[in-house]
Image 1 (cartoon, one colour):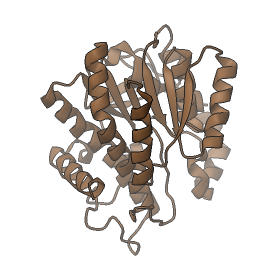
Image 2 (cartoon, rainbow, N blue to C red):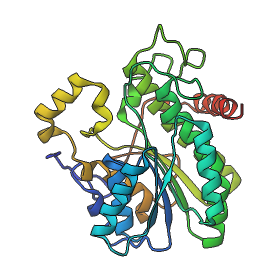
Image 3 (tube, helix red, strand yellow):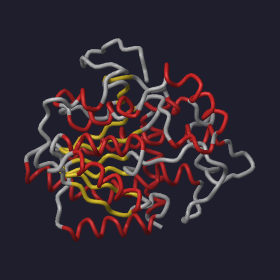
Image 4 (cartoon, rainbow, N blue to C red):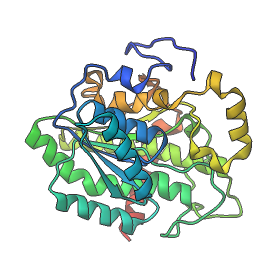
Length: 314
């Protein structure tokens, strides 16, 4: 549990929990998709959104785990509106199938929480032959967002409520490869570094949100796009990293956030009225923060957008 808590301008700090940052907020009539909601901060984000009245769609790779989370939420919150749908972000076919099924449901969409991710995996390729971390953490969410964008625009227009897209990034974006995004070496196994590859994918999350925000502003869409660092959290993302997992178990109870604290910034950016109208920002500890210089490179963001669009259009 994070024991240090200096409050920022928002009135919240690193020690604030998801319930605390959303206290008193009524999310009734909102519908949210939360990716990676079968465990960790994704499950806690879904629970707290449901607690505030939001109809939550758990978009998960493992349906059994997702259904278990849904049962726990409904047991705690009997009036909760929760559905589970299958989504594998490392597969473009799965993403397209998910969106097709969601569109067929007739449900609107107010909030898209791009939370799912993998961390520092050994070199692997996705089903679409892309390096797994880049494919899952960035490309999958890029395609998902683009395919759902028109529905979000219609929902915002018809409901007269601001739509929000939230990319869960990480301060690890400060540790990518030296060039930031290795456009010509995404699948280069020989020079692959699992930590730098993770940093690259998290940098891509921020660049995606900022370029998307710019485009939405140009279009006059009533939708915001922001990214965030949830904090250092002990979750199963560390399953591929025994050394780091051991360190977390040793000192984590003092300097690592617990899961309710880790989900706080996501819930704050998704629901809090203080965030209304803010777009293209990076948040940390439920406050606006500054990312790295690479993360604010507008030319890099545009290049990544074109590169990602090309990959997802094939």
